[in-house]
Length: 107
Image 1 (cartoon, rainbow, N blue to C red):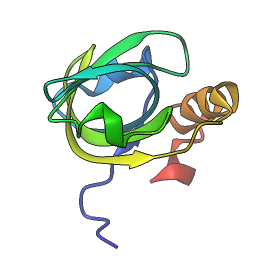
Image 2 (image 1 turned 45 degrees about the vertical axis):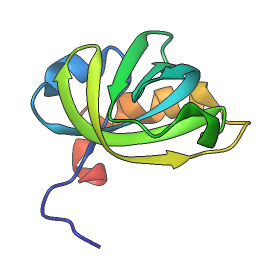
Image 3 (image 1 turned 60 degrees about the vertical axis):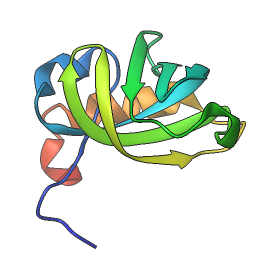
């Protein structure tokens, strides 16, 4: 496992702190079209994912690892299916902990 460039756990609010850096975010898929995926973050914000695989191959929830281009766009490196049931509120809490005084536990 490559740990030289870790991806920070983010939600829609936290992503703005990591523009230009590698992030990971779980999204509920809204739609996909032409390599662009629209998804909803764990805190209810909409994010676009560039270079995403076709939506037909994705489950309802996906984890995206890539570079945050701005506070609403991730350029995907990896998209992983997380199935059709996922507890977004728990993931949202995890994102908050990972970006608080407990940050050292997640890096």
